[in-house]
Length: 212
Image (cartoon, rainbow, N blue to C red):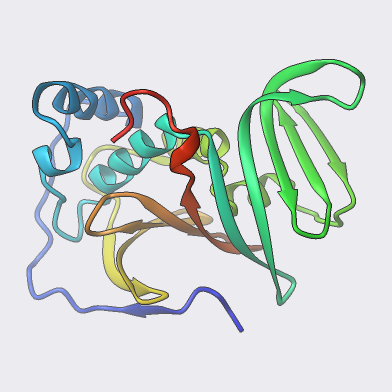
């Protein structure tokens, strides 16, 4: 069964234009981080936006991704449902050295290692789009960097209210990537792209100091 059961919700409020000076998610993330330091939980401090302000939704999601290093996910790969974990940190390169990077480990034992800027090591998994797999699994650095590239903070990115596996969520639709964000908390909870889809949760035990 497809783990992503998405049901759109009609929004009775028209979308409002949003004007922001920042043009990348990093700039907005800094504003949100200041809110965390000054007034506690940043999502509550700024308030979640109405549907239609997908740029702000994505900015909140990127703050969460930046402060966590591990996720647990359920992926749909070729019609097959599969569990996986992903961690960002010091990763074994399989050559006796550790490097900063991302490791995705599937329940089948297959692994994908990503070492920026251009090194991918794939073992025990047949996948044509390994980076898309890392994004669908919610790998925090890979997905966060992709969102920073995609986001255009001019009010043109839309957020649609949907239900994802029973969770009230925003769907933020970028070219070739849709991000799903929990409406209540602002946490990213899923990704779909033309090749893969996945739901995930951030692992709190390995969060950094100061995480929301």
